[in-house]
Image (cartoon, rainbow, N blue to C red; front, side, top):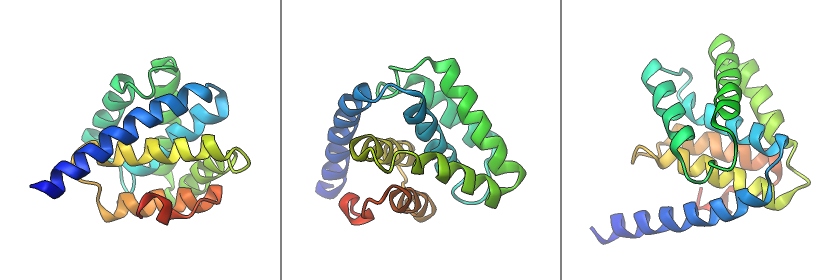
Length: 151
């Protein structure tokens, strides 16, 4: 049980830190990259089920970290990236990664987006291997070693 408590504590710390960081980066590129990583996490196993889409959309609109952005704009971008991934997963993935890569020169913003991805991935209590791989790819796109996030 101690390990589970440590994981929950670390997730809470990361969430609080992410909210502080996100507040510094209230701009279009950051919002787009955040929704791109959310869509990548939702589609990490290659598909996005209607339940997964709904669960992720609900998390986006209710998450304290992302509350600095208008929910309708976030959902619009999440739907955009999700639709691309559903239509053609490989092409959609390239587009989502390119959106995240726009933050490569903005190290703090890039780290905050990675944190958003980790929070989304762990929101259901199961940060699975496919979701971790999606976050690793996002890390590589912005030039951050995945090991910085224990990935």
